[in-house]
Image: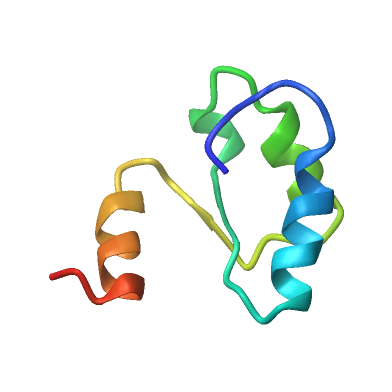
Length: 66
């Protein structure tokens, strides 16, 4: 989850976690609209909170796309 308005992202993230998936949010200090990510963090459904500069490498590592 990168940025957005609203609070429905935590429901999707909760479902992803329930299915043993990994959830990553962009650090709210890097977001133009931090509502979605902040809500996911507060609800405890984000596995990782990352700065936007390391998101690409992290996704590559987790998916084995290097």
